[in-house]
Amino acid sequence: MSRRRGGDKLHNKKKELEKKDFQRTTNDKRTVPDVIIACEDSVSSPTYFQKIIDKLIEDKRITQDSFVIAKHKHTNPTGVLKDLKNYSDENNKKYTDFEHKWIVIDRDIERVNGGGHKKEDFNNALKDAKSKRKDLNIEVAYSNDSFELWYLLHFNYRDTAISRDETIKKVIDELKKIKPHIFAKLDKDNVKEENYTKMIFETLLDKQETAIRNAKNLLNFYGSSHNPERDNPSTRVHVLVEILNNLGKPNKT
Image (cartoon, rainbow, N blue to C red; front, side, top):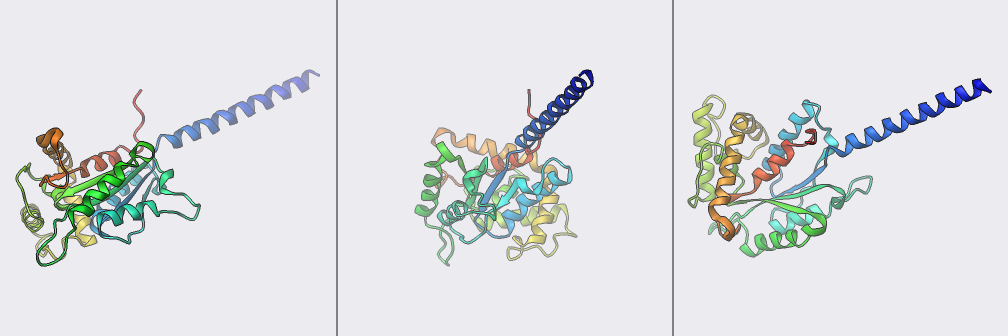
């Protein structure tokens, strides 16, 4: 009888340890929130955010499964929101199953020579995303006027209006000052290409905290009256960048 009781104790202890291991593994998984984003462009901004994720994977803070870029089908703000909502993977995981849900869009004011978005389209994307936040927490990383404003804020703070073309020109000029041998052939036609986006990310990485600070100060400049469609320049890209940077960090106690 004593042997049986001893065996029962060992069996129960083993089960208890297995239960604790399972609970610990489950809890560890919960400490790494997953993120889904849908982007207005198909190359530059997805590549930029993927570079952040690649570094976290390299540091073994997260796995690739923690981050998903929704399939790109639309280039207008409300269409990008639709891309997010239409996401579904082979396991029938929906956008609603992610902890963080983001769309990345530009104001991209309409231009006389074509291109850009109607302000109603931009505003409707913001409104439709906001109407879902209570239950689904859809966030918007917008830029007025373009994503490249985020790059520009790595170099200096600016709160006066600037066009898309001027922003890109200033970014190119600054990059050529830093690394003329790498960006010698960089221009407005190739600045959004994947290889250049990767090089831009690496070049600006040590200035990222400056960009975050400048972006926060820019929103504070507008105060409670901030209007994303009207206020040029402005951006919320930094909020998404901070969320991605914090993935896999231990929870503060």
